Image 1 (cartoon, rainbow, N blue to C red):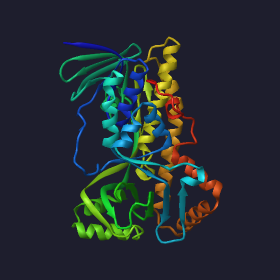
Image 2 (cartoon, rainbow, N blue to C red):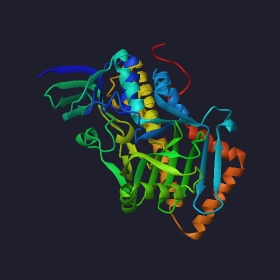
Image 3 (spheres, rainbow, N blue to C red):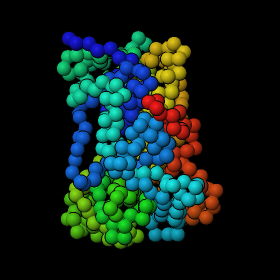
Image 4 (cartoon, rainbow, N blue to C red):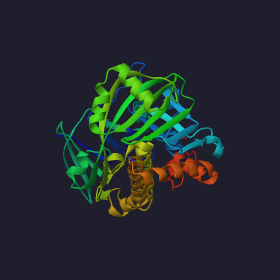
Length: 407
C-alpha cells in the first residue's frame, strides 16, 4: 500500500476546492486534491448550464491566484446593470455600476470555465491531483487525517478539507450533522437567446411560485434560473420548445423581446442547508459542504470563495505561530470568520424567497413599496450595489487588492 504525506488534503476539485488548493500551494503548503471526476478541458461552442455571478471580491481572489486573465480570455460576461421587479405592481429597482464609479457590477461566468482555469494552474502551483479517484475511508483527529482511497493508497495529511459539495462524503464520514430544509421549489436552468440583446444587464422578476433570473452571456444570450414548484419545473423541462419559449417570454414580460431556447434544459431541487459546525480537529468544511443557500441572488460560490480565503488566512497565521494545520485553535479562527456571515446571508435569501413568493395583499403592498422606495433613495440603492459587488463584509486577504503569491 502506497502512502503520501501532505500538509493539506482537499476532497473535491470544483471551483472552491480548486481555488483553495492553488492558494495554499502558492503559499508553500503541500497539497493533494482528491476528485472523483476529471473535469472537461475542452467542449463545443455551447454554454454550460451552470453559471455563477462572480462578485468583485471573488474576481480579486481569482486574480490574486493568477487565473482571472485566463477566465476573461476564455469567456466571462461583465454586467453593468441589474433590474429587479415584482409581478404586476409598481415595485421595481434598477442598479447601475456608475453609481459606485465601478466598471461593472460583476461577471457571469460558466462554472466549467472557472474550474478549467484553476485546474490549469495546478501544475505551476505544485498541487498533486488524485483524479479520478474516490475516497473509501477517513480518520481525522488532532494529529491530522488519514484518507484511504479506492485504489488502496493512503494520504496522511495535517488537515482534510471537505470541498465535496452539498452531499459531502467527508462531512458524513466525520459525523458532522446538518440542519436542512427543502424548499418546495426546483430550479430550471437553460440558455436562451434574447431578441433585444443582453444590454449588459442582469434581470430578476419575482413571481408567485419563485423568481426568474436572467443572467447575461455573450452574443445576446442569457442563462436562466427559473425557480418554481417541482411539478411545474418538470413540466417546463418537457414542454415543446415553442411552448417553452412562449411561456418564458411571457414570464419575463417580454422586456428582452422574444426569448428562444438554445440547447437543453435541466431542473434540480433547491434547499436550505447548514452544517452544525464547520470544523473539528483535523477537519474543515468549505463551500456547499458547509452551507447551501437559495440561488436567487447567485451568492453560493462567492460565499465559498470567501470561505477559501478565510481558511488560507487562518492556516498561514497558524503556521507562523508554529501550530499544526489541523489544530482546533487554528480552525476556530476560520469558523468565526465565516459562520456568522454565511448564516446572515442564508437568512436574508430565505427571507426574500418567502416574502416574494407570497400572494397576501399586505405582503404584496410591502414588496412594491419597498422596491420602489429603495430604487428612489440613492444611498440605500448604493448599499445594495455594494453588497452585489461583494463588499460590506470583512474580506480575507485574497479577496482584497492585488498581491499575487507568485509575483
